[in-house]
Length: 383
Image 1 (cartoon, rainbow, N blue to C red):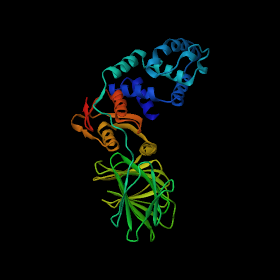
Image 2 (tube, helix red, strand yellow):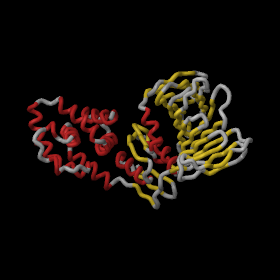
Image 3 (cartoon, rainbow, N blue to C red):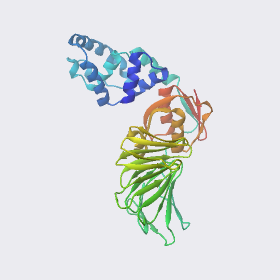
Image 4 (cartoon, rainbow, N blue to C red):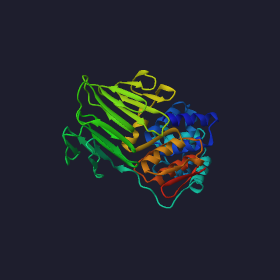
């Protein structure tokens, strides 16, 4: 909602860019009833009674015109008798339009989106799924079942979430690594009860038995942790530039080698993070993110839901450079990206990860006006 309000205010101020105008239209198209209703209520409450009397005529006039733009059924709402009893979605859309988003502009934008912007492909590409390899320190490798989604690691056995056993672990095996390929994800419950979700192209290495005064694991790629509480034995996560220490909490670690920084985002509880390059240590609170790069470590206030949406099968991009978006897509769909013509634009979108790549690129194309071409698992950008 913050991004919506930011773009809307820029429109009112007259300094909105064309790409932002398209983004505002897409957000208007995708917004749910409650959010639009809140915006409409805020607008209507500021109006004088005399202004509201004229608003009804404007609503009746524009409802039929905006139907093809927002997919709204207007049959039941063309004869309301009072402004404040209109359906929340109707009031919101009408308020937005009357406050400056002209019907003709939206119509032309929608028309251009369907005619000029396209995603061309020889063969569509399906989304990633549950894929992972479990490797033990004794050399044993097990390809995990794709019709399961969670591995439960006990001290001497491994089972899936439905109780199906993978077999007994040999005494020689001391460590285990769970690795997801590009286009894969998997969940694991560690021997102490800690829950971990691995994103695509990621790995988690951990001991089969947590012994001593701490519990230590290492992660590459991206992982979401729900750490089992144990004040006597801190849980330590080692990544490329950070060492995270907790006793029980929820957080996300993004540690991909092709990203410019390592980011830890705290959802709940408290974590202590040591920047391994400078030995600087900070303590994060919920809603904060620690970002480490070669220049050091900084704390940022963020909306943590954006950074864990992937584990619930959503892409959430908020003012994100297109190149960063394409890196995420390349990992999830196991495709290569031709970065030669990628424009330096920042885009926002919320898209399900269970869609074919053409549907995701089409949503981005409508917002940005950029054309995409897919050939032999390679995405080419044509601004």
